[in-house]
Amino acid sequence: MEQRDYFEDVYEVVRLIPPGRVTTYGAIARYLGLRAGARMVGWAMNAAHGRDVPAHRVVNRIGVLSGKHFFGSPTAMADLLMAEGIPVKDDRVVQFKQLLWDPTTELE
Image 1 (cartoon, rainbow, N blue to C red):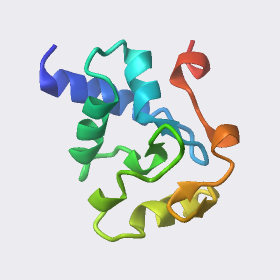
Image 2 (cartoon, rainbow, N blue to C red):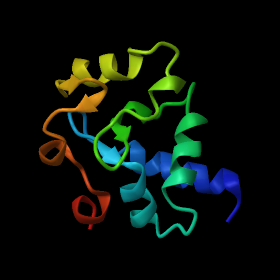
Image 3 (cartoon, rainbow, N blue to C red):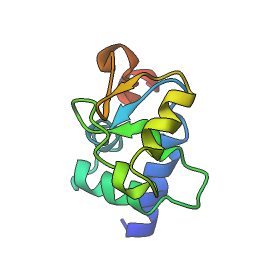
């Protein structure tokens, strides 16, 4: 699979995350059956700026806003999440487990 195709597959899944919910890099990788795993999903999110991709809804496996440094300001990712009603404290999604959207179960 070409890198471009891989990134587009990731973007298609991220576009399906409902507002007010979050998912993880690993959950997306598992859903797509990608051997490259969570790290490659992170690279796709880093390259998503300027596209119609809600990359702010993708966090690490424990709900930490690990990609916040790619949003232009230190608070932009948290601000976007909070604007959707997702509570964030100390760069971590509050009630992460309740807000987690897993494409493997939600899309099957």
